Image 1: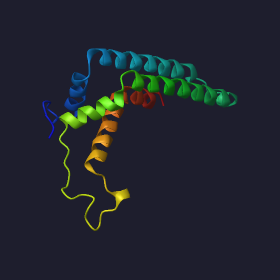
Image 2: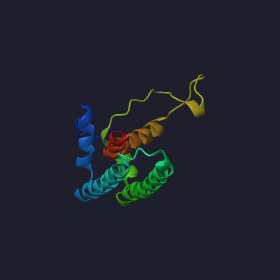
Image 3: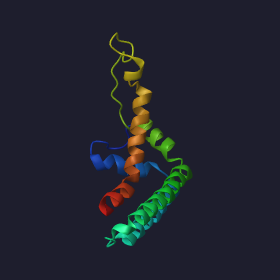
Image 4: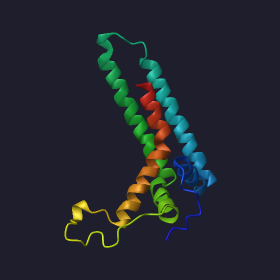
Length: 145
């Protein structure tokens, strides 16, 4: 059973609690990477704004490709630097109550590919929290589009 030491009733509280759960060094590393990636995105969108020339579409797509490749390396480095996914899963495992139907996966209408067992749900929640950490990056991309 989860320790449930955090208030997980609010939508934002759970994400804030994840940051409380992480070490100060981890939070600093995450913040630095998010600022770095945000700066790269700002520079990319700034570089293509106002370009209305049809001839430059190929150049824009090349810039977009290069920027996406560069940022994907940064996102991977961020996730690796703090072991983000495993820490998100650990946070979920210890602090988020997981509702699980007793006997799930064993009933006649359950099939292995269609049944999420408790561990699957914990991993999915870990991924959700990891995405929430990355949301400032997603938000900047959406804003720039």
